[in-house]
Image (cartoon, rainbow, N blue to C red; front, side, top):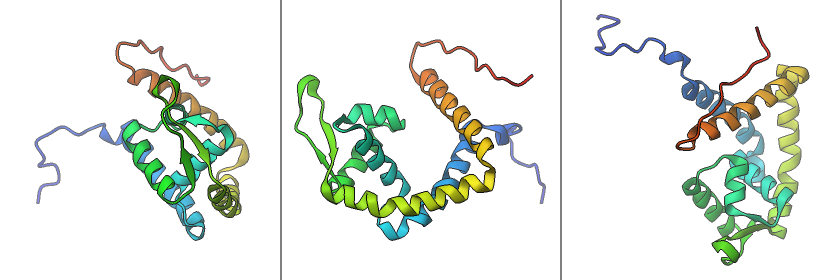
Length: 165
């Protein structure tokens, strides 16, 4: 059996930003999902509930922008949370927007999940180091903004400036 018999040149694909970010995101998500399992929600639902709780009332579009979630995925996720009685969605308001608020049941679920999330997060930060996490989190935020900007059609995005030589 020949090792390199595939006809395409795939060299360099292991450096793909999407591949590496998604692989890391899946592993970290699995860590938090395991920790939150007893609360009955997943880490993605936890993030949405936190986003709504911190900013309510919040338009669906604003929450999507905050969490960098596309509208199809957001709609599907909100449908589940609404069905579970964890969020309330308003009727269309001015500018055809709908607004989100966390329900009493949602607050209770979030309160039940928060200690498990805190424990998982403390373990994660302790494993990688607090200073490293603070720096990495800032870099992840910067990369997210860069990627969002690059994804907008017709918009020129400046090169990413790093503090490294």
